[in-house]
Amino acid sequence: MKPKIIGMIHLLPLPGYSKHPGMNIVIKQALEDLAMLESGGVSAVLVENENDHPHQVKASPEIIAAMTLVVNEIVKQAKVSVGVEVLLNDPQASLAIAKITGAKFIRTDYFVDKMWRSNYGKMEIDPKKLIAYKKKIKAGSIKIFADVQVKYAKLLEKGKTISQSVKQAIKAGADAVIITGKISGQAPQLKDLKEAKQTAGKFPVYVGSGFSIDNAQKLLPFCDGAIVGTSLKTKGKLDINKVKKLCQMK
Image (cartoon, rainbow, N blue to C red):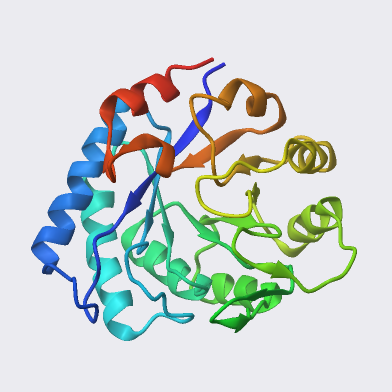
């Protein structure tokens, strides 16, 4: 069975950042990435404002406006499902953009785990509030892909297992859970992925970092697919050969 690959569309810097090239260029690059990912065979795409450094914890109005514009253009042209993540930790903004544009899912790095991140502090989590907001804006069909014990952050709940996080995320209303390594480009530990899938059963589990041609065969038995960005690039640019090779794996 071919892996369910969700290809990343990393947007160029958005308004408010010094390297912002203008919205026409942001949209052009995003649509070129979409075309390449689709031609390579991905199952879906996920749009992130990855190049907005430093990330805002909660998105400012210009970021939300810009992402709504870009995602709307992507959804209009996409043949596959489109997802949204507004970084660093703004799942309500992601849901709002998805609702307005017709995107099908969001990713949220922080959902049920109490975590701390360098330079940003303790991350806000409130799954009940997020689900209530989802109902308020009538976004019931939009799926929530939730990371557990996500990369780059320190877990503040001593002794909490991956299994406990997965159970908590499912109970709180996630539609899929995501397991990552410690940083982007680093795969999760196999024991963590096995534990997550064993706990989740038929509930979808995705690898959220470090999934590549080199380790796909090892990881695939313990997940339902992967969200892939770094390993599909060569010198910072999407590489169609890498996309095709990964998507054609069984």
